[in-house]
Length: 169
Ligand SMILES: [Zn+2]
Image (cartoon, rainbow, N blue to C red; front, side):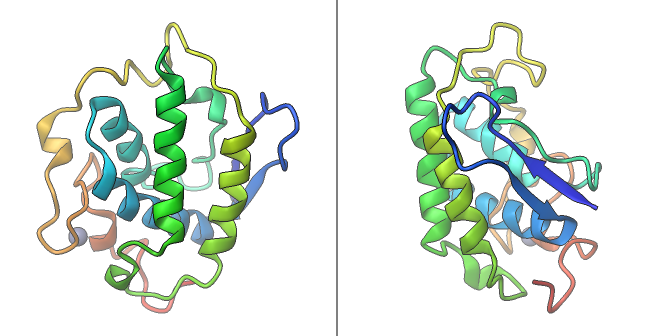
């Protein structure tokens, strides 16, 4: 059981990223640690909330295609932001706050970076995930006092014992 992250519209990308459920938790943990540090605009905050709440309610069904992200006419800056989040995660931003050692995470991130870089976003008129230019509710952006991450809908993911067992890879 796991999750597929895809980039169907990428002309000549490296293919999909398939992660086990445990690997998916790690992937979203490290992206959330980086993203909460960087997000400033509503669009950026909405993207990081996708990671913060990722794989909390729909385990095994949390993969998505890059084309599902609500890209706007400002997609170049949006894509640059996503790449910056991935690069910051690759620099192990905040990994000391993890209760486990993620030896495989750099591999996931490097692969995902290639996929995002090969992908050309297309602005979405009626995005299924809503208009990310609208600021998220302030309560979603409340920070966990211990980990400094967004609480999101599901609460700080590093405080959630169901996805943070000690020793998990
Ligand atoms: Zn926390």
